[in-house]
Amino acid sequence: MNSLQGKTLAEIGELRLLEEVVLPMARSFDSATGAGDDCAFIQVGGYMLAATGDVGPRPVIQNLAAHREDWEAAGWLAVVATASDVAAAAAKPLFLTNCIDAPPDLRVEALKSFMQGYFRALTTFGFRNGGGDLRHGPSLLARVFGVGLVEHGGRIGRSGAAHGDHLVVIGPAGLFMANFLLAMKAEETASRALTPEDSPQLLRFPTPQLEAMQVLARHGLIVAASDTSDGLIGAVDNIARASRCGFHLRLDERHLAPEVRAAAEQYEVDSHWNVFFAWGDWSIAAVVPAGRLPDFEAVCQSHRFEWRSLGEATVGDGLTAQKQSSNEWFDLAIVRNENFVSRGFNAGISGHLDYILRTPLLLKSRDS
Image 1 (cartoon, helix red, strand yellow):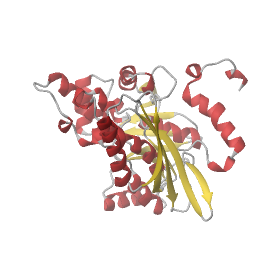
Image 2 (cartoon, helix red, strand yellow):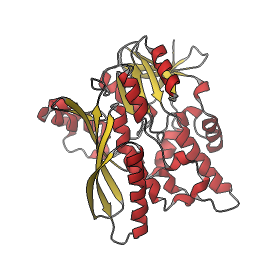
Image 3 (cartoon, rainbow, N blue to C red):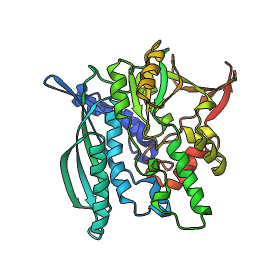
């Protein structure tokens, strides 16, 4: 920690701050909570609880003219941010509680719309209302704490991946970002003012993968997972760091939705894969035990869960990628959201989007 003496948060970034300062300190005081995963795991009597908390981010769709005052979407997203962590633990939703800041000059109908989104999401996802606090603050902002019940017999955190295990993404990949980019383009070219009803519902009301993760965990088909709130590459990076392994990704263009292709072409991003790996879908990067991918596929098919195969866990560290029908291997750039740095989401959406969409993902070619 001496190497951090005199450094600012901006100089070291969120990931290094967590790994070198926050998590070692947390574990020194309470080693049993599994600090560093999407959820902390707490044994209470004969039950295991998954506990987490998050700040409801400002919805990126509020950058669209039609959604400037879309407070219902903001309230919904405040729940999703925490519910998605509970989903990553494959836990059954129990309750949410909150601390909400609101400025005194905020219109009552705006707060009412925000709470409508909050309570509708809470109920839709199966949580009970655990109350909360409403207080004077500089802007409308919700901090949401959530608890789920682990019923599948063990922890599912970011560690646990081993050589030969299968890497998958559960839920959509790139669909949110693609639709957002297409909506921006539509506003630029529209002959009339657009309304919220013109936007796909997934932009306003994304859905975490709660049911899919619970079902798959009950079948023993998930050994590690992380949600994609910081991007799909960010989630894979989380698992690789915690599991002390690498991942080799196979970039199959059949996984690219038509909207992803269309958005990449219209927005002139570096590649289709920049959109595919972006955040916003609230999907889960998950690791399936070696040899059990057929079982995983069968369960997903019977329940109609959306998923895509991404690759395999490898010995060593780092992420590599291989294009479909190619013997070329590449180092995969770790392009993800990170707090305290200038390219992060909270530092400004314009610069952040430019970073995640235009940074080359496939670096120097490697021998197969």
